[in-house]
Length: 211
Image (cartoon, rainbow, N blue to C red; front, side):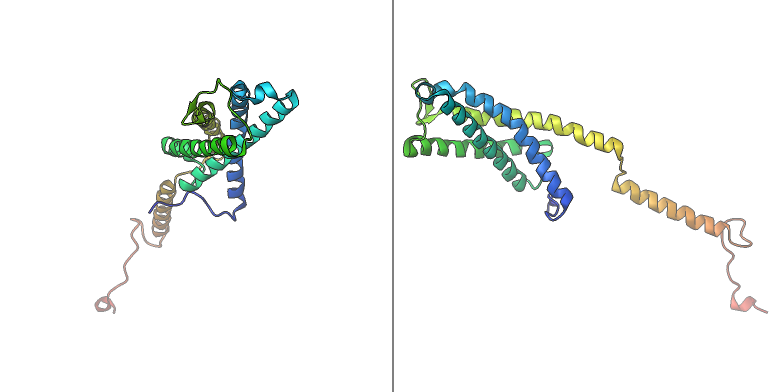
């Protein structure tokens, strides 16, 4: 059975570790999603029909939603793989789960908002796949992949600094060291026994040798 990589949620250190991972992931994905939202504006009718303030609000609103989705999918993958260190341990498996969940939600959101709620509409320049805009689908294939690469690069430096400041011995090395220390201590005690030059304690006389 695989040991869980997620410590107890009651541990304050664990809460800080998970929060830091989510914060880094969200911080890295924010500028990428913001840039994508601005770049794909001409593919929506909002670009021609709305005033600049409404366009700015739509970009900020959609970017905030993107970051929320990105953080949620990262958290779901972390729960499924039992640890927030999956980008380093299982990057391909985690990325596959990340892309599937992100694209699936985006496809549903685009269909629901375009054809049910009418929250936005595609311009003629928007390429579609089964009626769903191709640009937002590609967004959730490209941006999470770039975010993963940046995340691994950033997090790879942090443990190195911490390990240099506080080096730790492996558990098996500590065990062997303890055994060696115990053996030496026992040998020293035997060597210091009275009348024992060879390091072997004198044996008690047998009953037949007693006067």
